[in-house]
Image 1 (cartoon, rainbow, N blue to C red):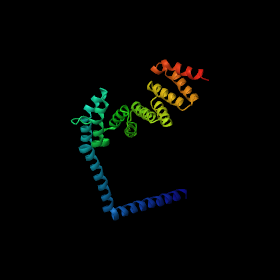
Image 2 (image 1 turned 60 degrees about the horizontal axis):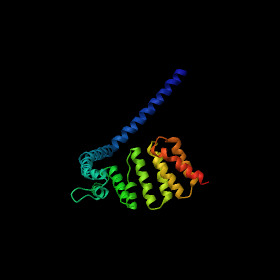
Image 3 (image 1 turned 45 degrees about the vertical axis):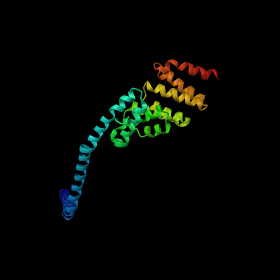
Image 4 (image 1 turned 120 degrees about the horizontal axis):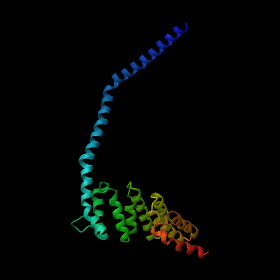
Length: 227
């Protein structure tokens, strides 16, 4: 009796499976033109994207990088105006960005932002630096710190403090000491000596071998003696 019931259940399950398969086949037969059309469209889009990247995006990116070589040389030499705006023959970072946009790579925005910062054009510096989206943690922290420097130039100290703290947290290494020091100085400008002292002590505890660490005692003593 039990075996009969088991066979009956197996038969029912088999019938259900066959019914489902039949429905799928029926749906495919009735809509095969639409289905194959969708598959073809997806393949066509994928092919277009591949061709765009291989035959347009990659060559343009390589061209932009080549155009930046003279500007990078000027930047390394400290000639920030020339690096930013070029000399009429070679493009500067600003022209490279205007002509190639994001295809120039994230570094173009960082270079341009630092140039504007060095030239005292703080709003322009922020416009470039905020567009930097590089993946390298050290350079990302540097971009944030440069934003902080620009905000200091604009006397927007709360914004500057936020940038310096984010920069220090972005890349936990010896460079963080410089960002923490800047954050502490800004805190003193804002009248928050307690937070400034906390930041200075963080440098002393975490980065004693940094350049900032060697001199940090004088910052700590200044605040503690002023109490």
